[in-house]
Amino acid sequence: MIVPHTSFAALALPRHLALLAGLALFSGIMVKIMIAVGVPDRPDARKAHAKTTPKSGGVGIVAAFLLGILLLYRYGEVSRLAAPLFLGVIAAAFLIAVVSLLDDIFDFPFLVKLAAQLGAALVAVWAGLAVHHVALPVLGVVRLGWAGPVLSILWIMIVTNAMNFIDGLDGLAAGTTLIACLFLAVIAGLHGGFFVYTASLLLAGGVAGFLPFNYPRARIFMGDVGSQFCGFMLSLLGIAATQDQHVTLSFLVVPLLLSGVLLDVAVTLARRGVQGRNVAQAHRGHLYQIAHRAGMDARWIALIYWGFALFGGLSLLVFLHVGSVVKLLALAAPLVPFAVWAWRVRGLARRAGITDWG
Image (tube, rainbow, N blue to C red; front, side, top):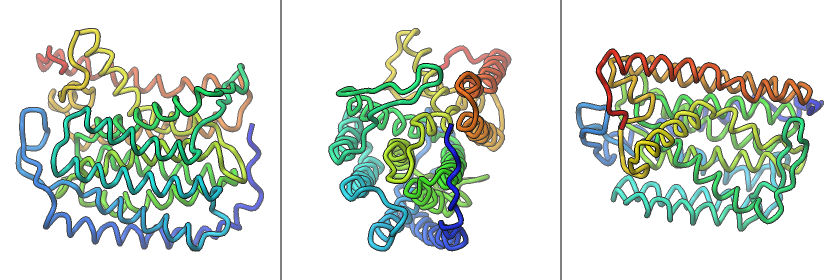
């Protein structure tokens, strides 16, 4: 159990909320610019939208976060990681931002995307951002040794692609990211994880500036530059939470917050694998896509996935403050609402006559 940090007031919450609001405004301005000049996203058989809409609105998210993280590196005194780790976050963030924006423009093949993501992940891990141990309920602390950096790279790439896959309906990925960031900021702040607290607010500010342009009706999509960046940074913050100079949080924090996203992707890829389909091929077989194809309003689907993030955050609060046996229940809790959702989507697909889940 982690004891809440007693000097949370030292975080100067009002000042940080003002920073969040300022970054949201800056992000919004950048998004409006991208509405005018953004890369056009034209409809096709695997997309949900019916008319050409600009994408790359994630430039606003990226610009706000990078501005904030550079200011934090220059002027931050408490909200810091060790210098090599901090520089690793900045370098990796810049790299994934550049390659994902190029992906929006040139529509790289999947293997090229993976190679670019791998390069950004290697930069972060080479700087020292790797998980070296995992504290598991009942089992206790498991030391990863040489496997730590390898598993960290795999984790970064899984979350980066999961957020990319889930970004298929208005507001779904952005709202999920915003809720996850706010929970992560609150939890890290209460437990003295000052860097993760501030960096989460920076990312939340960028997403908050973008979301009004993407939900309930999208004037612009975040594009790969937004979805890949959000996934990459959330995965990196999950690793950074285990290496903060003030307190180490469980590596399981971010997996719980993104449980809905990760479960959707896992179920979809498993189903396609069993069916002998190419898991790397673009498709419309995610549960959220099936529900939409079956006639469910996209706005409600987004709210359901926001609910998964909210439920994951509440489960996380329980997980961090109970004994080891109850931790197992908290860890498994997100499976329940997701199972209900999967059953509901299966019923919708049957009634709509959808037999091809990909």
